[in-house]
Length: 57
Image 1: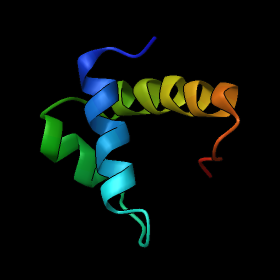
Image 2: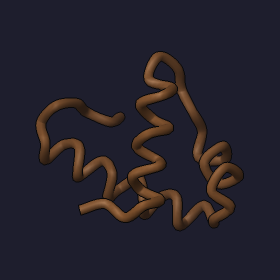
Image 3: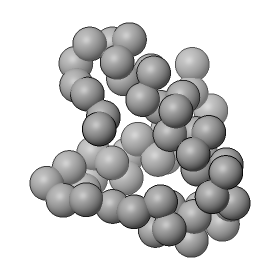
Image 4: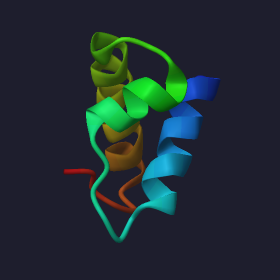
């Protein structure tokens, strides 16, 4: 299960699905550290992969 910020990160990834977004963009958008974004992205990636509907690279 994703927390609220992780859900918002997933929303951002969906919104920008036709382009790339950087970790720095997410750091600034959510006002958290790079390490937090990296940790959240790992959880989001695992969540999406478990659903088997898409793959986050």
